Length: 387
Ligand code: EPS
Image: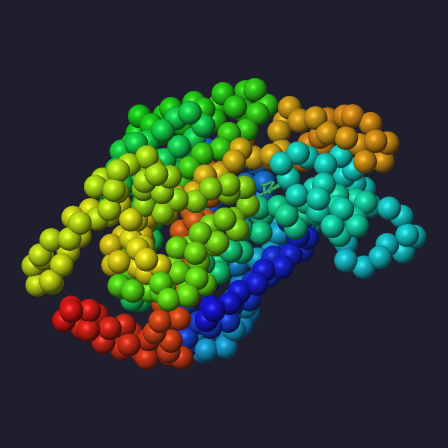
């Protein structure tokens, strides 16, 4: 693993912190680039009002000097604006009188980390769990992913996303390249307008019922060099790295690459990508059913990842639970929540794919400066064209 990163911080704590190690020197980076992606994460019909509170102002406090990375770890800080209203509850130092925190949580919400996290870390107040398990953390993952995306962009690799399902509403039109602003302009980040309207209705109906709704999003990377990853060892397979990165996003329950589960229903003659002689290259693909990864390696075709997000587990009409203090049946704790966050998850997915691919790029090409990396990638491209 050449690109490592960690995040820290609670949802209503003072700030989220990110640290990333392995970015070469000489990459142009400024807070405005990070902010632009953070803003896109807040898009989408169905989010709650916390999004209006958080301005997601990101400060770069390490690894960048005068707009350029210098090879040292990148350090980022994202303050939680909502913290001012939680300062007493989330205080770091012990309260003078030892008084207990307000707004404790003793009724675990089904579908969240609350119950098992409380058992695991021996926390009576489940807020200790939910504050860190919260998807607020993804704001920092998007910021770190944007650093990875900037590196990839320098190499001609671009990443986009769209929503293909919300509840029962499906956009089954094939992916087409449109300006990213066009997808962002859709209230649910779908390509097809009629499908988008149906998705909005799904969210409205869920909200009306005090319920929540999940969906599926698709992330596409173009311009990926041939042969990132390897078949030679299980932990070098690119689909393994991509799958792990997406499965590690909150609320994700399934990941597909290319045809994914659909391939299981097809015959072999309909499931693979045949070769034909190409123009200036010896072979080219007739299709991209593999989703740009075959035998653990990138094929040079677009990498297409889909992820299934379960409905958000905090319901305004709460699910059945148990009060852990009394052992009695009750309704789950209501924490303010979103009805649907699939459009935001799609934007997060772009950052996740950027993180996985930047790691794979650095693994294959290495390089301590961007010049070194660029030269190695260009040399590789000449090699590939000759084969
Ligand atoms: C979240 C619950 C909501 C979301 C939050 C993630 O927070 P709150 O309970 O404060 O309203 O708004 O997401 C963000 C703050 C964000 O920036 O995405 C959860 O429980 O995961």
